Image (tube, rainbow, N blue to C red; front, side, top):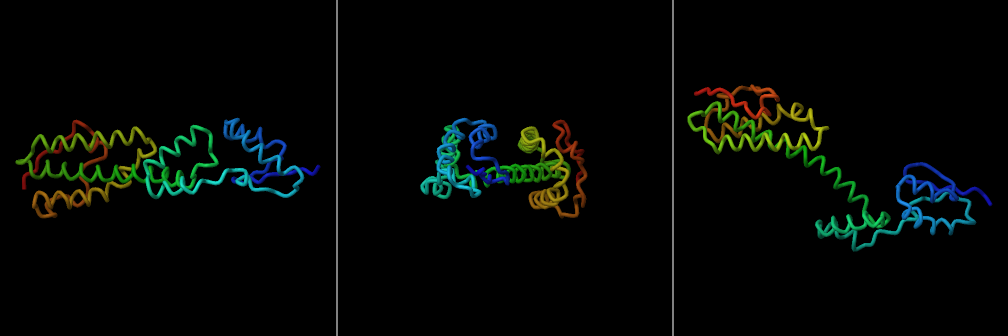
Length: 209
């Protein structure tokens, strides 16, 4: 019998006779390997290279449509399929898209909170006569949320520094709008270091215009 190889989606090939063990090792799921083995038997007399995806059950149209029509239902269905080891029915393109969007979402949230934090630090410093517990609560909340994001995603450790200039420009404009002070009242560049911005005890000294 000729040696039959199966092309895997990530560019590897293995003998059909070893595909079950191979998949069990790659996926850590004997159930997946067992399911694939059923499809492998049909290749008994074939000598061509076969795409591994042919062994996967096509994604039911209704499941794929859930991603566009009911996101919560799609997440619940996807979790059920993964826990049941029914990987062939998972809409992996959608899963990948959502994982990527999570990273983008964390970055967007961090930038947004940094902008608000800088806005309130400037207000605190340049409109000290109106300082209030509400302002301090906003400062504390933004700091806490930023710290939480950095703890949950350590890879974002240097991101605040990377976007500081952009966030300061936006926070500066917002501070000018709210205080009704001319924008040239404030420093052109951020006067605070990242360490100060995230320091729970730091509040800038008042500068009354």
